Image 1 (cartoon, rainbow, N blue to C red):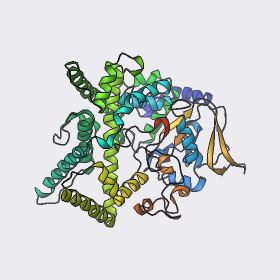
Image 2: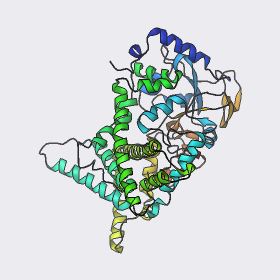
Image 3: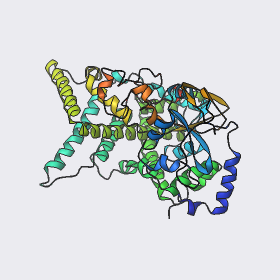
Image 4: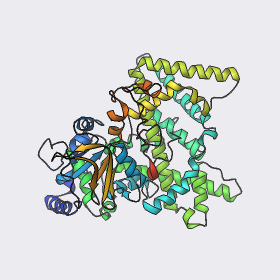
Length: 489
């Protein structure tokens, strides 16, 4: 039996102690006056079953339609939490994320197990140091001639699929998401580390196998027992994680395999690059070069420890290929559902390619600017299918959330600012924000690329919002915690 099944992990006496500890950690400011969904069944999971077990947004969108962009829901032991999709509140939160607003320890520790103590784990001044070191690696991407690598791996993947479909007399099933994941991993290896991972050509590639369905198999559509176990850990001392991760658990084994395999590959690449630099090789500006430079720095503020160095590499490998690969899969899904959009994209891309051939030029980043409809489709896919949809944060001190639109409390009052207490857990509803009617119009759940080309009052392009570093979308958030690699993605 899996150790993350609560009936095995936590006997009744410990459950009682955890419950008492949970009650003692309640924020100083109550949010019980904020409207929200009722608990559908008796038990200690609250609304977490609906929130986590079903498809992304299935219940969240219903709740948002009924209660608005800010509402209360129940977590374990009746704990009140907030789901926030309000753009003004999100902009405020992420302006000080990492300092005033922080990741709860449970979120950091689950990430640490497979990513290590890198930029995704760090907070406060430590996060600022990590971000300052890594930022140069993601600057001026347009001029780094990455398009040939993208095209080469895309063509290799397509050729592999062509062989699969033509080598059999019967209909062949293609595991599209696995192929895309391998292709994006190979692309990250080349453009980020100048190293061919070979995941696309080698079905038994250990790194690709470790990453396969990583987040879905660990966190996707969890059982009631797993939901309880994963969240009850948030009420226990942080030191418990270092004990639990040493115990046998199917749920954690995938994360640990990624840590082991990722560390092996990362450190081999780093040692090889350091040896080359010591021998006189020039340090460039890709991710590996920036990390190696930081490792060799004598300035403590510019230096990364060996543990941090490995963690940065693993974070970029996971975040860079998992999210991008899943988004491409959703792109193909939507094009398959909308053949007319598929034809328009194909015609536009082929037109640009013919123009490049006519002028004797290679496809470059600047050519995407002329693919108006294709870019609109990409934005619409990002809007409908954010692959990181529910991060959660908590204030380090009492705070007040400004709201773009007043909400009505259970006692009938209208408020345009919401006081929250220190430690109040707030779930950032990226999927909810990306489908908020006030921002996207009357048909926020529909695939309408045209909203990005000719926005109307019915189908808006999100320009009324100031949240998000790209196209007013929530996918890459904003502020100090915004995604460093959003331009690369």
